[in-house]
Image 1: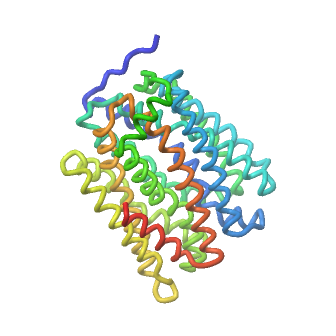
Image 2 (image 1 turned 180 degrees about the vertical axis):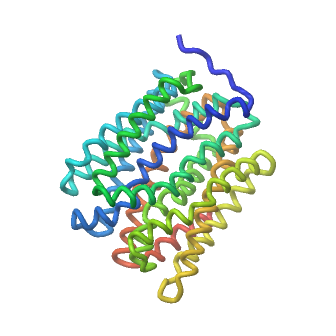
Image 3 (image 1 turned 90 degrees about the vertical axis):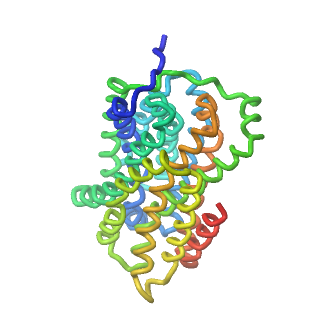
Length: 383
């Protein structure tokens, strides 16, 4: 029988929460590695912005399908197993990336890869929440969110360095090896995530869907993921095409704009446990809208508004997640949280990791990137 989870004081749980964050770091870095490599993929496969960003749509399709199924896996396996094993299998898919030669093959590979990494989020959050007491959830989520914000700094630099020795296919193969090693290590030495959840049911999902708070959480998760992932996923193309950077300059700018984000997310975790988390979330969305408006200013006038917008956009979205998940944890019982994430995250993932990046890429190729940013700014303001 599986051992029961016993929450620990925050200081005691920090190393184990950090281990979960490491798992998330590899999950997030592998999904985001496509971003700094899009220009290389465009040139190698001879495709345009819209076709290149369609790979993000394919990845998100697999990702969303896995999220929809994760609730069923969590009722049969421990969350720690669901968080680690599919990650290692997704790494195996990336090891096959050197054999990809056409856009069609790349799309198939990224669907399979997205399916592997899509199981992590509900399982990872269930593992994380099992480690600490409810009063410390804000701080625990802050440690967890260090992963993507650290990844934002490392991904462009690692990708640019690896491209000196190999092509984009080799970069993905290297990432696949790291994922396999990390997933195996977590299974052997990780803590938490031993309690299975109840299987999803039409009745249970119906109760949640009739709760207005469920729809509010789904909307806020979608918009925040658009701000965190969708914008970042097209920033290299935006900086090269619209701000007139070179590919290497663009990757350096991506990393530089994220340097302070780990400190920002730690501050957000502290603020979420001290101040009204709902007001913090609202302020972050308004700042995000302002940042996107700055990014829509033509670089032919000046580069400064766009660069200032990139920095403010990153900070506003880094700050939003700890208070947002604090509100989520306060609004729903522990046994309801994985089910709600399994219901809401597939749509949020498909929209934020696929549809919106494709929309931005389409606008960038046939209209302007500024048009897409203004539409998203309006959505963020309404949120």
